[in-house]
Image 1 (tube, rainbow, N blue to C red):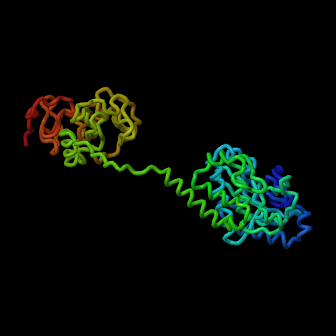
Image 2 (cartoon, rainbow, N blue to C red):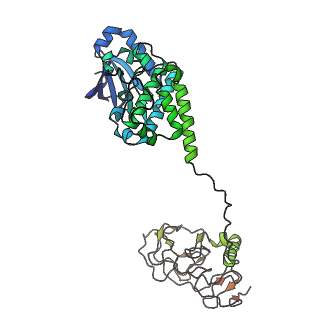
Image 3 (cartoon, rainbow, N blue to C red):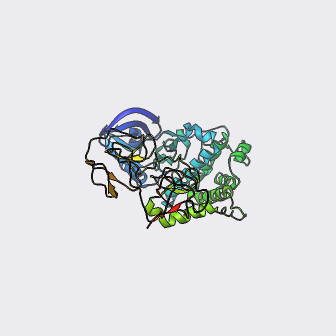
Length: 435
């Protein structure tokens, strides 16, 4: 049918048949309404097109958007987004009061958008409230209900005409009539019972209504379903405004109040923590101490074998190393071009045989003749030939030396040697290095 390929019929009404169809140009599924020829004959092409223009003019998340209206193969067709189901078949709204109230808020917002433009729906019922996969509810069939036959209304022995308002049954619908229909739908969803003539309060199922609906929202829904139009909301604009005020009260009541107690003071830092923070501020950036010890949370750098604050030798850099690869033995970073781990004795690899680019952070070269290895500060072994570094490292930020390994330490701050793990038994154990 034109650019649409019909798949299956998903609904029938007094105004149109609804099909699931495929838009062969835009390559998407749509809901396609085929206006019945009898409706076109009774009201004329011009009137049908005018009402379709009303539906197309409404743009709101809670109103089903008519994406295309055209004549195809002798039928007037309306294409819109394909919904998951309609409210009459949506079990979630009947099981959960929270979902039912969310649907009512959505429909009230869409209806208010239409009433601002003085557009009346005239046929608000569960079948005209569509539920989309994201849970959003949206009204459909704006402007076309005036073409529907009276047979679509359900007559009962009590005189109730489906979900239509009493004044609408006498042929005098107003914007308030749409509000009444939505009020009945809300009560029906929340209680499983539709109020009947003469709509006296409280109707059947009031206990279920009170259990599912928060206190501030109850009078709003009750006023929406008032029998007399004078006691009802004049339009969906006023109804939606009152509904949102009520829900804000509910949300404010549910929001936890700030505690009147004073905020707890942060625990005082230990002398070790004070020393660690001070050292990091002074020397941490140059020494690369951007990591934290897993045990004491003190600052450490990747070349360190031990934490200088607590002596832990179990720090892993497997997930935080700045190098692209990690040595499986000591879990420190390495490069793919290296053939050995420069931090531990056992780490040996098969390099990728690529020529190493010049390392801008290297401070000296390997001492073995013919080796092109470059050494970064505090490396223990050459990353190419595994030659052990014999010449002791020095650093201006670490003015002292460990008595055991002779590597640089800080007598004023460190409690352990970061290279061999030797503990300082008392002040002055570390030997001051020569200038």
